[in-house]
Length: 161
Image: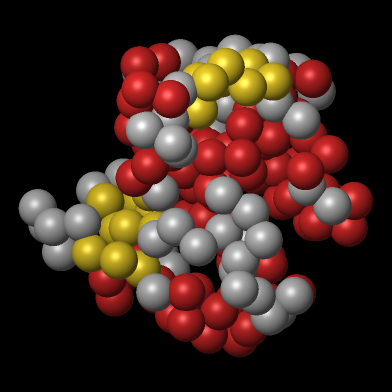
């Protein structure tokens, strides 16, 4: 069972990158989330988040996260202090202050390690890397956003570690 919402992991990732002067575009964020999910599946034997990852032209994508941050295009996503929460519907939307403490300390360590590792690569290099890996290769079909199963991610990265 997942512990977190993918958007909360994305917000944490964005803020961590901004605090550490690391560039984080939507394209790069998508790849970082993929590698965070892989780390949780291999280290904790459990997903970090339950939202599906899909095989898009430019690699793995969490659609909900992509759509939340697509307004930034290819630019850096700024620090997020608060956001609008629509989980109770549009008529009951709330402004919410983001609290990194909703993520447990040991989980933050895994997340930060993956962000730090991914920060060594450009977004285009991360795209290239994911395009060489079985989870994306076996799921991708031009023009279709097929799901990359958590099982295929775990199986691939279990063999790699």
